[in-house]
View 1 (cartoon, rainbow, N blue to C red):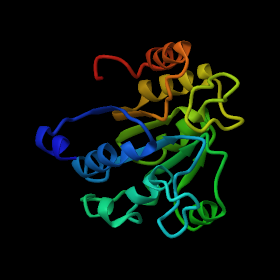
View 2 (cartoon, rainbow, N blue to C red):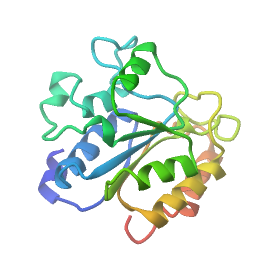
View 3 (cartoon, rainbow, N blue to C red):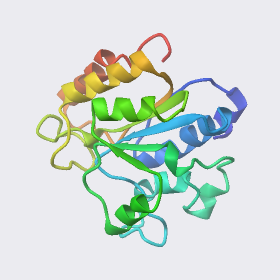
View 4 (cartoon, rainbow, N blue to C red):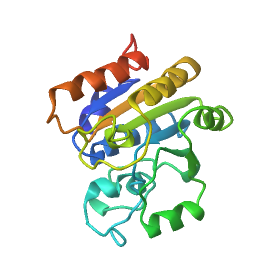
Amino acid sequence: MNILQETSPERVFTVGGTCGTEAAPVSYLNNRYDGDIAVIWFDAHADLNSPDTSPSGHFHGMVLRTLLGNGPDVFCENIDRPIISRQVFLAGVRDMDKVEKQYIESSNVTICEIGNDLINQIATSGFSKIYVHIDVDVINPDHFSDSLMPTQGGPSCEQLSECLSELVKRFDIVGVGIVEYCGRQSKSANQISRILIEGGIINDSF
């Protein structure tokens, strides 16, 4: 976070380990753009547990809830401006704990289908900037099997790439995070590169 604040970039591209990596870039960009940013969470999991509800205690399952202001104190105290629930658009989520479902039902978090549903929801949300979080476990493990927590179902690599391409064409993407890639297979790195290139994420801005 200190590096981001010192260099003050307009756009941030992050390649991280677990989803916990996203705490710094998302909170930084949300503060920089005064909350005028939609956070698209491409992920098989909602990452909406809190320290009180997490079955595992792993931070990567709490990071989105932390960005919303309810997480471990050591992280929350470094978030100058928490996001609010209407900024969050879950895309591809299919494995949630009961508490996460209850949180979504009581908040303004939006669950979207990957494709036109997501595009339309963002278009009507009123936000001018977008952060794109991509946990590679959002991809169907029959098409991509090198994620930390593979989860049945989800889009193919091509479907994710097509959705990213539409987002790039229509919206101002100021941040992208790629996380939870394990690197066990040589072909998987090429798959990720192809998704990002064909999706237009890797371009003159990043």
